[in-house]
Each structure stands twice: as C-alpha cells, then as structure tokens.
Image (cartoon, rainbow, N blue to C red; front, side, top):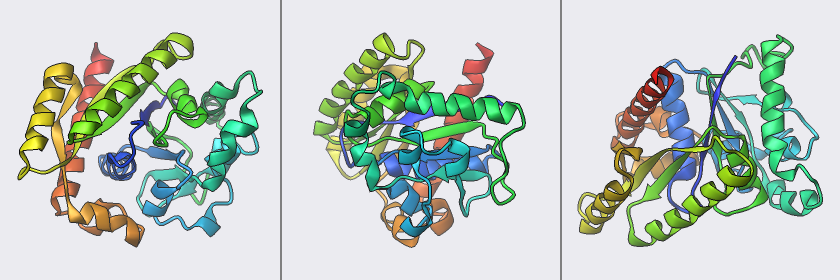
Length: 275
C-alpha cells in the first residue's frame, strides 16, 4: 500500500482548513478513494465534524505523537464509507512542552505513518470494525500556528494544500506559510511541495474577493485551483450536526464545490504520477 500524505495548512486561523479536511475527504471517499483524516488540531473540530464525540476518542493523534498509540490503534471509522479518522483533542496543546528535548520531535508523525505503511504492507494491521486499514490518501488537518505539531505534519507530508480565505489579511498569512514550507523543506523534508492553493469563503458580491483571487492567481499561477469554495451557510451549519456538508446537504453550493475540488485534485495527482 502506498498512500499520499497531504497536510492541509495555513498559519492563519479561520480560513477553512478543517472545513476542507472534512469535505474534501468526504468527496474523495465518494470518488472511491480510501481516505484517512488525521485531526492534529487541539480543538478537535474535524473529529466533531465527523460526529466523533469526545467520549469516543479513546486514542488520538496526541497519543500517536507521544508514542502511546499507533495510527492503526487510533483510527475510528466514520459515517462516510471508506473514510476513517485519527481524532484530535485538547491534549495536543501540550505536545510542544512534552517533546521539547526529544531529538526526533519533528519526525514523530512521519515515523508513525512509516510504521503504519510497513505494517499494512505486511498484512499485520488489524481491521477496525470491518474497515480495512488501507488508504489511498491521508489528509492532515493542521493547527493554525507554527508549532511542533504543524512541523510534524509537514515533515510527514508529501505536499501541502493551502486553503486561503478571500480577504486582504489572508495574503500576509500565506507569505508566513511559504516561509515555513521552505524551512521544513530545507531542514526536514526535502521533497515537500505545495500541492495547491484553494480559495475559500469566496463572496461573489464582494469586489475584494475578486481582487484577492486575481492577486493570488497572478502570483501562484497554475498552483491555484480553478475550483473556488464559496461562502455558504450550509457548510457552516453541517459540523453542528456532526456531518460533512456532503451528507448534510449534498446539493448546496459548498458541497458541489468540494466535489469539484476533489475531482481537480485527483486529476493533478494523475498528472503528477504520469510525469
């Protein structure tokens, strides 16, 4: 088994990282890909968005990072067929302090994913409630900060997917993220690449959205996805019901956009593999 690992990251909060992890993951699963979401945010919002209540999170990404659980042990199946999640919880806020003297503190998640890949290839990984622990794509929902957890995600990832809110200040956060990617590429993960930039919370009634989109496209060119995620009430409502928007209201504009985004991402992956 060989899976692609994509870190969904932006050091600015409120740009749609978790919404993208939940709904892109669901759309990829609907496209017959086996998807694992790793919730690395201490708020655990991706876990909540899949209906995983705190009491059900016996093992979390925190346990994986501190070496108290394997990825296989932490996976919980979701309501979405072919999609599992390693949940997150508030303990992730303490990872920085706990690992500060560990020489391999930035490689904890990579080591865990490498072990999981080897175990799966050897047929050792057990099934969780009849769901095979075999995946095509791993999405990591990163916290909105430059922390040990974020560095772990980027060190473990093949690429970074950047959700970018269509507002002026978002451009400043993007420049910070690019510096972080360069830092990780130079010191920890030479093969790390920018998978793409996704414009989120686009409001067609707002001229600023068009201006930001135009500026980002002029700077990043083809790295920016053609698909734009609109500002959509149903996307915002869905997590409170513990459902991805695609299950909550698959006909809403937000759901339709994430289905298109998944298709575009898969096309990019096919082109990368053919190159």
